[in-house]
Length: 334
Ligand code: MTE
Image 1 (cartoon, rainbow, N blue to C red):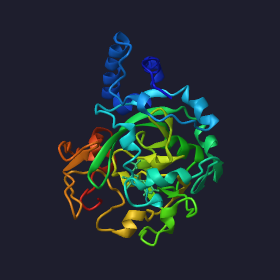
Image 2 (cartoon, rainbow, N blue to C red):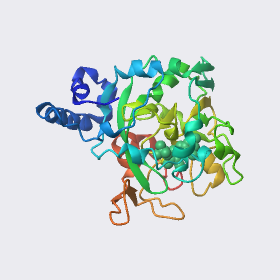
Image 3 (cartoon, rainbow, N blue to C red):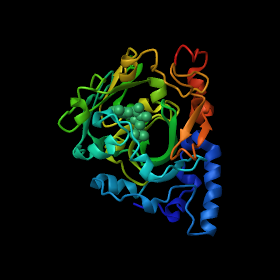
Image 4 (tube, rainbow, N blue to C red):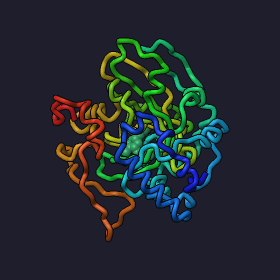
């Protein structure tokens, strides 16, 4: 599905919820200026990828139906969007292998329709829900976010999906819901990396957020990217996107969302607790024990064009999220 300037021109102040305005007033204004540009030069697409290069894909009918009513550019970044080909061929998804091109090669085997997600624990409405029922009540939004991996590379991806807070609110958290735990599918038949003798991860891949982080308007559940359904290697059919945290927090192919009272254990923390913390906020001042976090390689890059840029506090989202961590020692809670 192409995003044409016409789609973008349908965005008006009325389309933008107060929440989205709160999220990125400055960015919205930048987007609005860009809309003027697109209006005067109809062939120009905004700051973005050439969506005509994006591999077309037919999503499930519910996805295609909702796509038409997407709030495009709900949150935008000033950065140039990463080409689709790089975003889909340089991946971390250990369920499909540990090399960056393994997910693109192996994830095609994953059957994502039908898909259901169990939402349970400290909630008023526990159950196993069809993905389309989870997504249905919310309008799709496009959110262009920076993605900063703990390995010091980064991309800029236009996600499609819904706020995580919408799903949590509908589940009805009880007063004991202090954290949210997420789990990825376990199915070694479809996910060959789970069968590998070399896999260090104790499956399922697990991640977690504090409840206030999960309710933050920037925390997002993606079902698509680049105007189309999510490719399997990027975490189809449902993945978390937490743009101010290192990429490993953004768990893919989610089958369970559990609200709990205690801070949950998480996959990378279990593997190397001194290297990967629970919070994992992007922080150029706190190095990984084995490498600096002060800079990052913005993909695509090459030997001759290393494209190294300075890493920003909270990946550039400090204005929106720093308040969540007021008074916390970010060296201790890394
Ligand atoms: N989720 C699962 N289930 N398994 C994984 O191996 N890798 C994480 C995260 N989510 C991972 C995962 C890491 S380390 C990163 S950097 C991002 O996914 C990468 O997302 P991308 O491949 O879409 O760029």
